Amino acid sequence: MEKFFKLKHYGTNVRTEIIAGFTTFFTMAYILIVNPNILGNTGLDKGALFLATVFASAIGTLVMGLFANVPYALAPGMGLNAFFTFVVVFGLGFTPYEALAMVFVCGLINILITVTRIRKHIVKSIPVSLQHAIGGGIGLFIAFIGFNDAKMLLLAPFNEFGTGYTELLAFKSAPQVLFIIGLILCVVLMAKKVKGAMLIAIVLTTLIGIPLKVVNISAASLDTSSIGAAFTALGGIFGKAVTEGLPSLFANTARIPVVLTTIFAFSLSDTFDTIGTFIGTGRRSGIFSKEDEYALENGKGFSSRMDKALFADSIATSVGALLGTSNTTTYIESAAGIEEGGRTGLTAVTVAVLFLVSIVAAPFVGLVPASATGPVLVIIGVLMASSFADINWSDFSEAVPAFFAAVMMAFAYNITVGIAFAFISYTIIKLVQGKIKEVHPILLVATLLFILNFVLSAI
Image 1 (tube, rainbow, N blue to C red):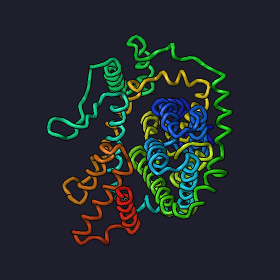
Image 2 (cartoon, rainbow, N blue to C red; image 1 turned 90 degrees about the horizontal axis):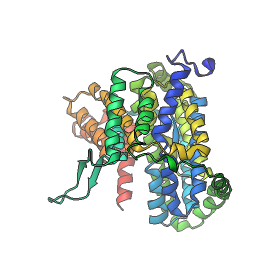
Image 3 (cartoon, rainbow, N blue to C red; image 1 turned 135 degrees about the horizontal axis):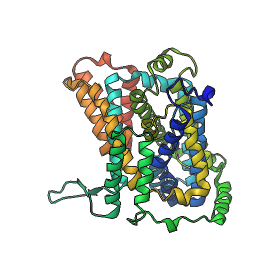
Image 4 (tube, rainbow, N blue to C red; image 1 turned 180 degrees about the vertical axis):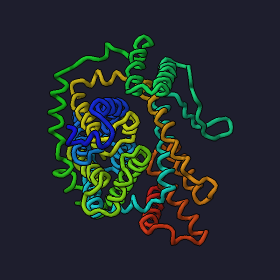
C-alpha cells in the first residue's frame, strides 16, 4: 500500500487517509438520497437511480484513486442533475434516455479534450490571480452549501422593498441548534489540532442529534427485498443511453441544433466545475505541487497527477450515463478529506468502498443530518478563504475578476458561473486597458463560449 500510493512521499499515512475518506464520504453522502429524488421526477425508477448513483460514484472515485492517486471523490453533480431533469426532460421535451445519451456524448467529448490536452491547456491559460480567486471563491461556495443544507439560511423572494434577501435563522429549530453545536465542536477540535477533528465533529454532532430528535434511529431499517427490486430495475435502464437514447436523439434532424446546444451546456459546466475544483483545492493544499504543475505544462501523455485526474473525471461521466445517471463529476466536498490530511488515492479508494457499502447500509448513512456535515463545510470555507491573501486587491484588473469569481459562485450556487463572470470581466478590463494581448488565446475562446452559453440560455 505504501509503495502503490506513495504515502510517505506525500507526507501521509494509512490512518490519515482512511479518516479523510470517511470525512469526505459523509459530507457528500446526501447525494445518495438527493440524486434519485431529482432524477426520479423524469419517471426513472428511484431504486435503480439509487444503485446507479452508488456505482457511478464508486467506479469514478476508484479510477480517480487508483489511476490518478489523488484524494478526490466523484458522484453525480448537483445542479447538473437538476438541469437534466427540469430543463432537458421537462423543458425541452427529451425522454430520460435521450437525456442520458446527451450525457454519454458529453463524457466522450470530455475524454477527447482531455486526451488531446485541451483541458490541460485551459488550466495553463488561467492567470495565477484568477486561480487564487477561484480557490477562495470555492471556499465561500462550500461554506454557503454548509449553511444552506443545514437550513440555516432563509432565502426569501421579496421584502417590503421588492428585492430578494437572505436571513440567518439561528436557534429557531432543533436542526439549527444542532448546527451551532456542531460548528462549535468543529472549531474547538480544529483549534486544538485534534487528528480527525472533522470526522469526530460529524460523529459527535450526529449523536447529540438523537436526544434533540433531529436524528431518528428507528428509521434505520434494512429491507432486502427493496434492494433486490432495485437491482432488477437497474438492469432495465443499464445501457439504454446507447441502445435507445442515441438512435432517437439524432433521428429528427430538426432537433439536432437543440441537441448540440444542450450537449455543449452539459460539457461546459462539467469541464469548468472540475477545473475549478482542482485549481481551488489542489493549489492551496499542495495536492498538485510545483513539480506536478511543471509536468502538466511540459510533460507528454499523462505525466502529471492533474493529467490523470482530469482523465479519470472525464471517463466517469460516460460510465455514469451508461448506468443511468446524469453527469458524474469531481465533488467539491472532497475538500473536507483534503483538509483532514488526505493526499493520495487511498482517500478516494476509501470513499469508493464506503459508497459500495452504502448499498446495504444506506438507512444508517442517511442518519447523518445536514446539521452535522454543514459545520464541517463552513470550516473548510474558512480555511480556503486564505487564497484571497495572494490576490493584489489594489490592482483593479485583478480585484474585479477575483471578486466576481468569489461572490458569484456562492450567489449563483454554481462554480461555472463564478468562473464565467471572472473570465468575462478579466477579458473586458484587459480589452479597455489596451492589454488584450495579455489574455491567453484559450482564455479568450473560453470567455466567448461563456458569453455564447449565456445568450443561448436567454433565448
